[in-house]
Amino acid sequence: MPARVSEAFVLQTWPFREGDLIVSFLTRDFGKLRGVARRARRPKSGFGSGLERLSHIRMSYFQRENRELVNIDSCEILHSQFALLNDFASACALDFFAEVSEQLLPAAEPNEKYFRLITAVLDDLRSGTNAWRAVTYFSLWAVKLAGLLPELHACLGCGLWLEANHAYFTRHRAGLYCRDCRHALDLRGAWELQPASRAIAEEILHTPIAQLSDRPWSQTTAADLRRFLAQQMESQIERKLITFPVLEAAAHGAQAEGPLCAL
Image 1: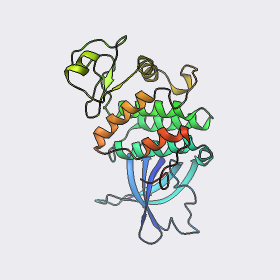
Image 2 (image 1 turned 60 degrees about the vertical axis):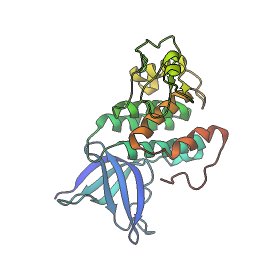
Image 3 (image 1 turned 45 degrees about the vertical axis):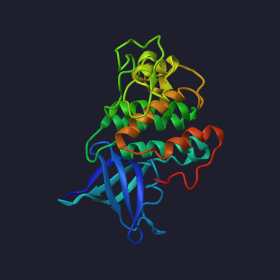
Image 4 (image 1 turned 90 degrees about the vertical axis):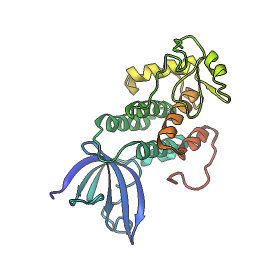
């Protein structure tokens, strides 16, 4: 089969055999694929730093019939995220983007919108903007594009319009609930999704990231929204996200046990 050349983002790598790597990568035209990069872990590898997490590359590969893994021939770096590692929150954001993409995206299903989402949030991070804007924007759109975003305007229990009312969410339930339904359903330990955070979500759904309102972003900005979105992701993948608690602790300078890329 002739070699394919695709624009791609590297999501995750695993050691394979002596000196090889298995690489999970998101292509613009064929979706998420996995392949083997021969001798990629050897000192004089021709791949260089092209297989680092979320490197934006042009990859050459080919796939034999009835083989799940493609054979990766070479890659050319278009954008490296190396400079972002100087900021702890941005480095944690990269890990979060990679883990969510690896877990949520099905194999070999083209998703041009998701590819453009990754491109937009990485461009925003490289522009020097606070990492929390990119993280919040990515989280909402990742859930939206995966078909997991519930109604944010109405109570799932009674249908009450929530615009000016309290809204609550809890783990293992997809939507939002009004105060009365929270008590009627005995949703103990529920968190509130503040009206300000719901307004941010509405803006994100209708505005490119570079054109969002000029507001001061910090870890506390829309933190309840990010928790809500992370729970939607975790319900779908049926496990806890490793990087989410590390990311949310980044503002306090907390250090995770072990390497950040412990996926």
